Image (cartoon, rainbow, N blue to C red; front, top):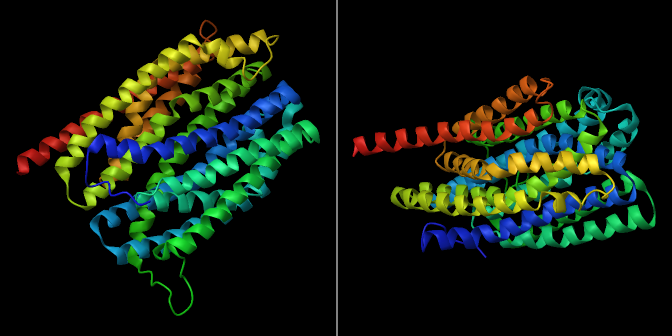
Length: 449
């Protein structure tokens, strides 16, 4: 099931490789949405607002781990393309140790400081207890999130995007079934939704670990014993650079979202509930562009390792065209169907929540091409071993978003719409910066020839 991304028709190869990643993330979004939808319908709007606030925190903290896995996967992909199996194995061992330790540290910090974290997020008093319950249960299973994402990114780095989909698809179905059993049948409320997610994550994490141990000997963890792989200071320095650059990028992205969540929370439960539903729709809508960007990144990594610069240039142009067309179509659909999409999450009688959510979707959703281009720029710079540039673009995008949101939202004539408008403005400023630097780099390469 491995796919060599350095040969064959470029766009066809990328799309076939990206397909399982897109489907897998759609399924992941689906079982995240299942929590919100089932809780909103069967427990109530307050419970849905609690899931939204807790989900933003969960996304921020798990993004640290996912970023680490993504960064180490890019490095493995580079050595795979270079056909350097020794360094590839060293990268696997070192990154597992590094990310495993970070996972344990995050888990401990969440349990110790959960009350302080929820206060910082300005969670309204009436939903504080439910948010606390949801977060505690979710983070009891964070190690399984690490296991699944670590091995999923390793498999994708060598061109295998199918197996991660198989495990994720199975557990997504299980998650929905457990949601219905725990929340609807047993009436365990918000805790039941969290427990369903943890059980599903445990099965996917353990399952993919067993598969990798059986089928990919190069990815077996050998940190101890007579067959252990020796880790040098230089190798750990390289692993840390790639992993933490991607991790900081992901966590900065989600820290900005977390800060926005705090501002949204200050507008009350109705805005919180609308934001929760709209963000789910939003994430689902542009997710294929995000996963296409991740596939594009691994395409760049393998070809960069193989020294195929011309293929990188051609692939970049084709990827930008495909993403632009997709995002334009999705923007039109979200704009036209904003009300119908909100009604998937809330009752028709919740007219205020529906109206607020429609405003969000029709402002931000119009400009999905901005985030589509940005995902490709992130992937491009990770792939050519410049993860720091991806981080810079994230800081520009999220920094603009947060600053503008906090400036505009308090203005009475603008209000919460200022938060929505800040999002696409941040995207386009980052896009302009990334494209200018890309062209500058290409011109420097031409002058050296």
